[in-house]
Every structure is written in C-alpha cells, then in structure tokens.
Amino acid sequence: MAHKAELALAKKSAVSSVANVMALLTLKECGQAIPEDLDKGLKHFHDCLNKFTGKSGQPQFNWKQELDCFVGCWTKLASNSSENIPDTEMTFEQLGERVSTQLQNGGYPDVISANTARGKSGRVRERKPRKDKEAAETTEQPVAEAVQEEPTPAEEPAVVEEPTHTIV
Image 1 (cartoon, rainbow, N blue to C red):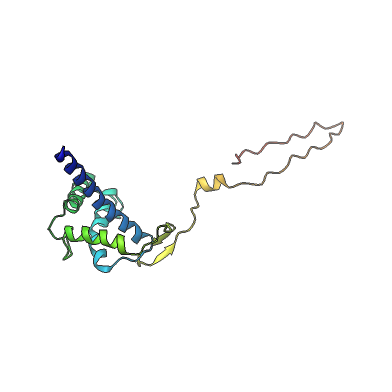
Image 2 (cartoon, rainbow, N blue to C red):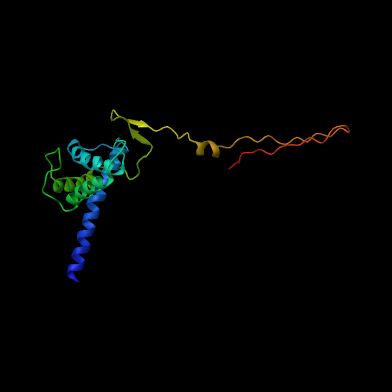
C-alpha cells in the first residue's frame, strides 16, 4: 500500500510541475511581469509547446519529432533533472522550484484579463474584436415591418417578402 501512495504522490508532483510552468506562461502571455531569469527558462517550454502545436510560424512541421521533443522536455522538468535547460544556466530542477516559488510569492492577481496579446515587439496590445462571418450573422439586423396596402380593383394585392436572413 505504501508503494501505491508514493506512486500517486510522484504522479501528482509531476503534473503540478507541468501545470505550474503552464500557469506562469499563461500569466506572462496575459501581461503579468515575470523575472528575467525565469523568462529565459520558460522560453524553452514555450517554444517546445509552439513547435508541437504548429504555432511556431513554420509552414510545415514533423509532429512526431516535435512530440518526442515535447515529451522529453517536460519529462525532464517533471523528474527534476539536474541537466541544464538549453540556452540557459538553469537546470530543470531549479526552474521547477523557482516557478513554484514565483507562483506562491509573485503577487499575481487571482483574476487576470485574457484580452491582451503581445506583439512582435513584446509590448502588450489590446486585441481587436473578431470580425468574421459568424459575428456578422449573429448581429441583429433591423427588420422592416410589412406594410399592407389596400389593393385597388385593377391590381393584384401586394406581396410582402419575408427577410431571407435569420435573426438571432
């Protein structure tokens, strides 16, 4: 029974390590300040995630290769590897500890605004409302009221056509 409890604790610790990095990446993307040394370590995970999900700007990518890279990268984090994160002086273990501490002591608000995005310059900019076909279809259009004219004896009654668009 003790082994089962240890295994469950190890699994929870691994998931927490991954979730903490994802949380800090999310806070950063929503305009919250992240210490520069953590930012360098987080960049590796951000890039790895973007490559795997096809958001790296490349027109094509080898998803199997990126999956292997993704799993390897996050496994090192979850297992507290003493190996350095590429292009940094920080180990995976150090990053995991620092991320956890930063989330606990960073003073981040409980509620953040997801309506911001970073431009290429790194500055936070407001997102513009979406203008797509769906938004145009759901916008209420004024409907002209049908006016019924009195028919004259020589004419057929006027036919009023119903609008062809759907009003939501």
